[in-house]
Length: 171
Image 1 (spheres, one colour):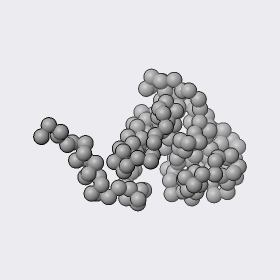
Image 2 (tube, helix red, strand yellow):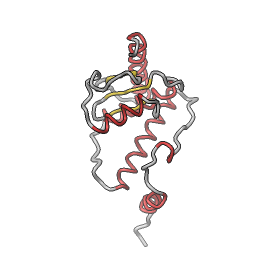
Image 3 (cartoon, rainbow, N blue to C red):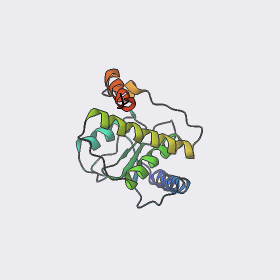
Image 4 (cartoon, one colour):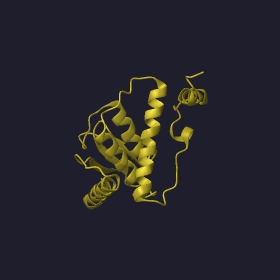
């Protein structure tokens, strides 16, 4: 069980970070996401999140420490593993950046082809990383493609995306 004071401190930090990002970027926060510190004893039902497969999977991965934190856009919730020792500052800006991105933009249609999904995912992660660098400039990139996303596109799929993006239609 997460101590109430730790939870309240995390909520306050997340809201302050969102406000700082919104001011730096020049946008208004339409509403605040729910924010939760979780551990192996936290259950999904207690947080009243929809019991969707993606929520269950990401929730378990964060609770077990596979990921430090995550933003669940469909539920507007930021979750962070309270036992993860990499620290809150190294991730809170990124998750708040994801929250701002999804709050200010219409939802994506994820049923499209791999090229569109790959491009959207890349832009999402770049925006999250950029936001984190704004509030925590010492952050270093920790994204290792295959170790974090084993089901990510193959090299051939990535080459196809790049060739599509640089294709000269005038020839």
